Image (cartoon, rainbow, N blue to C red; front, side):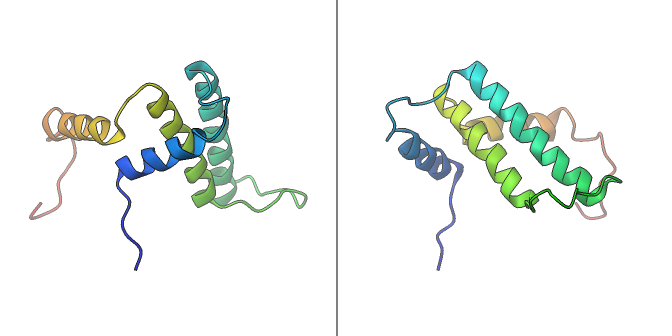
Amino acid sequence: MTKEKTLRHVQQEVDDYIGQFKEGYFSPLAMMARLTEELGELAREVNHYYGEKPKKTTETEKSMEEEIGDVLFVLTCLANSLDISLEEAHDRVMHKFNTRDKDRWTKKEGK
């Protein structure tokens, strides 16, 4: 049975991985460039799967799961390097959506 990972666990796992290298985390600016690169790769996969642009026969098969994982890894590195808790960041944004935007969308019956 696999234990569920919290965002705290994800951040610790990434920190343990990065901590084994002398170079450590890249600078925030370099990580933003990496994050942009990874988002571009995810966008390309989404476009191939849902859009009108088929893959070239020479392109390797990548999954959206893999690309989302790459985005999550780099985002976690950025958060770790800035000493930001992803759990706290998530709680803050959910509070914002549940207060500021609570009546913005049409709710389903009983919700």
